Length: 265
Ligand code: MLZ
Image (cartoon, rainbow, N blue to C red):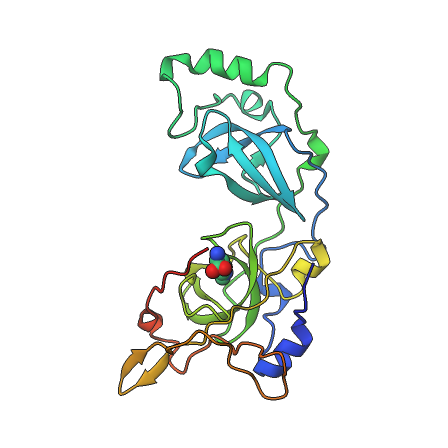
């Protein structure tokens, strides 16, 4: 599942270091995924964080779940780790004295919610308690350094985890820059985000890891950013396969120099 991508080789080629595991809010041993497709759970609505909703497990990759809120359309699926504090067994809301809410954008008439809820749960498979794992502890502070490598969820293609580099740091935020993609997928996130993982996490957890992209980084010409005319891989020294170079630019403090180049799926 790792394709031909080898972190040890890549770290040598790029002369980079992996961010230490202690930087991340992730379990040292990735949790088992005991969920099964079609099981129902309760999940925080990612588009309305005050609501807890019924969700169905639509897919799984390694310790991650693809979830769909019942009564929502198929365009708002989202991914969560099995040790996310956003997930609970069916019955959790009742236990804490709260109400299960319709998802934002509930596809039916709001007045039909109570009967919809009853129908959606009637006879449904529910995920047992042991599937829900305890959230890992939070690192005390942002210990990332510019240039460190990591594995990160591509938020535009959230089923993918890809090799990335810390491009810059601002207080509790890090700029996640995807290697070989010219900035089109980069984002800022908190150091304790659940979307970032130490190097080797995919291999350990049975999740696939995308190889770095093949787009060269921006080229600096007279203070302007010029895109290379062809998106051919730039071979790195000692590599016949043309491993793309790191996306770290000489000016990591100006992440907005990267044009948001749309890349077709
Ligand atoms: N459909 C896209 C996926 C790009 C994934 C990039 N991840 C950082 C493409 O292949 O162009």
